[in-house]
Image (cartoon, rainbow, N blue to C red; front, side, top):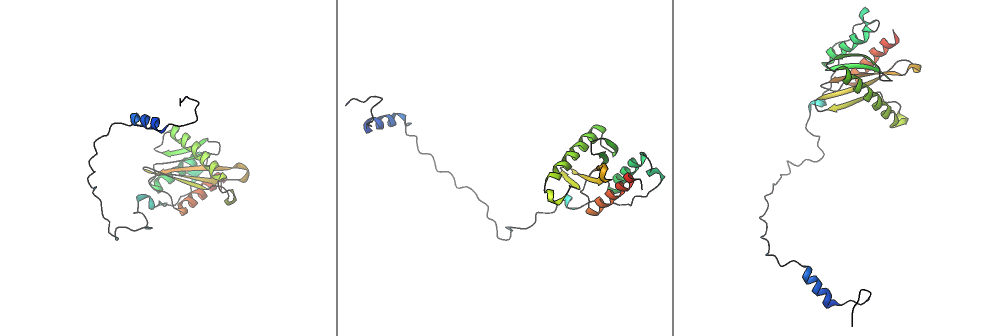
Length: 195
């Protein structure tokens, strides 16, 4: 019986012949792989659920000195004096303050002007994003970004309800304690309100 492309029957002998042509010639059997070396762990070495080894960032920076209010705190120069206090008291690399529109009010330390502007703008966006998370818990008050060599801490400093807030950024070797963030925010709020 002739077979054509439209035939519905299937010839097993032809299929075997085609399969034999498609198979590669028999290859010599591969040598069995050598047994792999393995490591045996004692039960004492395996501890599940333990905390990872401590790191440098588990410590937190606290203010080494309190802010001393003086006549130098008055006017626009007071912002720089306060940032200098943050840098020296926290042994930080830099500190800056921006308003909620991204305008740099003052900066102190090792960051150049363009880095301050960019980092300040990114902190503003970070706070805006933080406000969208868990809305039932209120606004984001601070953020800490762990970097390869240090931390960036951003704090939202409330001023007046109708004026929004200021953003203080501090770049240093360690994250800040809750108490340090609270004192810094209180000092900058006092300055913003002119008290």
